[in-house]
Length: 507
Ligand code: N01
Image 1 (tube, rainbow, N blue to C red):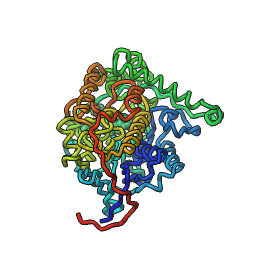
Image 2: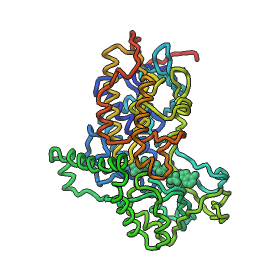
Image 3: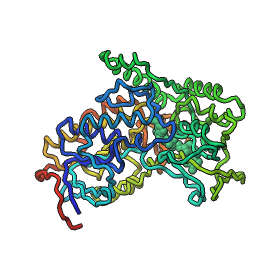
Image 4: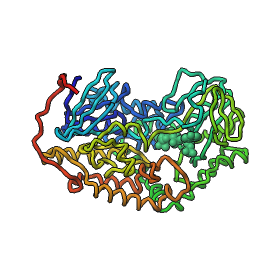
């Protein structure tokens, strides 16, 4: 087997992994390697190509602060433009030279004797062992599609497509199509499918709250101003950011303050749907904000179309050619689109990462819940940083802001451990426990706990372990400096760095 030694192995070439590579390079940590199973940069923005895929955070905020883009064509960007942007950032920093695409991590384990991560990868069919001092997980929570566990789904004889793995060759024209799910992805793709399909059935388990989407194209004069007026883009970013933080206050501390948002959602239903029965069906029964607040102008009009039916009776099973609902009715379909989200708290990737005592991340989190310290370090997994780790997700603003906060923490960790000759850093268990107990305490008042919904925000223990409860500037402050006192560290001599070295090892 070939081995490859690096100081930093970064898994994932999406927003977080690419950000880590750029920041490592900028801070003279040049000996890094990015590993990604795809063919280019972009992560979830590369993989989600379903019709209508777009971001629901305004373009100026949904971008790196260190790579502002004056050329955004719309106030909210669509998938292709974000994908292009991410690749342009990678190109301008030359990250592609230190990236292995077509490379899947099959196993990563901490080697306590060498104080290194041993990362087994499959590089285009060749097994390679990457040995790294630091492992950075930029795997993202939205990378493993979740196929619904519905009786008989495997025996369906027609076409099944997950929203995150779109088949652009499949022709929906005139077909009988079912969409399962009414989350962020479904509300974007349904209006497009409704136009193409002969008949479309949308299977709704829980109605989402949806506000209007204030999307528009930018005028050439605006793009000129973004490029030439000093500070303008930062001013726009700041104003979007501030407005969004007001929503964070409502979600975390005072859910009742979100009533005006609910009124906006109700007005959106009233405007988009004429049929009172359908209006009742799409009106959620939980507090606004408990699940992600969605943005759309064309979802309700799509449901109101004559060729579209909203099915709210639960799915009992799927046969070779139909969906059978709990009332025994058979719904014959040619294609089923599953817009049922991702394995967020139970990602199969967690099975592949093994810490100092040999247990996998999945097993550890099974026992203690999905927790980390500052969303980044997990006790028992030395020198590993997770980007968009536990309790860093958001329902109200840009994840890129959270990623950049973690990147500050990562760089400071790299600098401090290098300066002090530290070869092993492991967050103390008592510190991690207290940190998470405090988060859970804070969450008690939040809409995610009090709002009366079930959501993927919760882990198997019923705890909200995906979301940051509070203002994002609090997270920025918490991650500004690497607080070494929270960690057990081992100082030692560094093994001399080796460059790429094909070598024979026995395993
Ligand atoms: O997935 P979801 P998504 N039978 O989990 C239903 C991000 N995103 O892909 O609500 C029947 O939100 C499920 O029903 P219920 C964003 O963070 C961002 O849409 O659990 N139905 C729900 O309706 C988002 O949160 C953008 O009762 C089943 C739907 O499937 C995340 O991605 C755009 C079912 C899943 O909704 C995931 O969004 C798109 C079953 N067995 C996505 N299982 C931006 O704009 C699940 N459902 C940035």
